Image 1 (cartoon, helix red, strand yellow):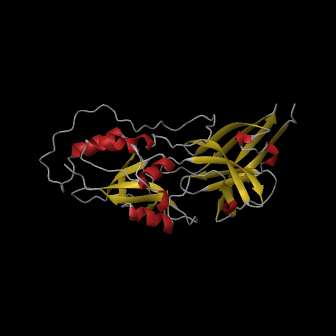
Image 2: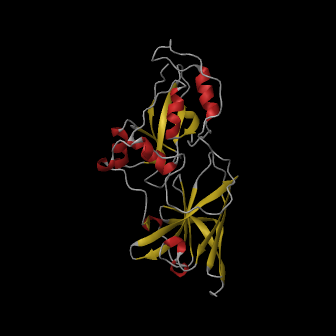
Image 3: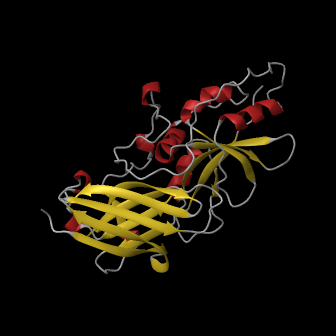
Length: 313
């Protein structure tokens, strides 16, 4: 039998590599060649449903190499995750439990929480993944065949955790609705009939990731939803930048811009801000970036690259 271990360590938020406030703890138990890891955090309520990615990390001369454990559940400010891994080979990473130095938790809006099991200093900027999503570069961009399009969820070899999912299930599959009215007589520059936008609002899950209402009435869609949108006055062609964003973050966003009439609508691709990303986004028709949070210490701030989409009757 393996040596029995059980301990608790505290999870702190980090901002610009500086250790901030304690928000919870991790509980670790090693028994019978298995390691059970739990995380518990209590956070202020978010205006949207955040995504928490949980990693174990291995300290080395190169930094903190991450091993993806899974997503954490979130409900009403409470974050919970429960993961069971092998003591001798953590998720086929070739690392054993004794190699691990702690946990790092990252949200899709750039927040970082971490704990050290060795009482060593944590520098989040040194965190990296051995097998991460490839960077989007001009040389790698090409038109994808229909059979290469991502499904509703991200294409990933990352293992799933066994934690309970507390958030509402999301689906981009359309519900049954009455056929749209014939709008063939509308001019190309006219806004869609109110019924079309209302049907889109009813078809897809709502999301409000922004700190203001400049872009509002947002719904979450996938690449697979584009043909359905064409039935409701929005004819949108996909491109590699959209496919890459959807593959990384599992969704695209459709929303209304401002409150003027006639209404103006936007299509948005989730991502982080950088000069290279701005070049790619602009190349594929998404010149504008709107951060999800009003201010952030993270230079690669999470947000959405967007463009206006004139509805077509």
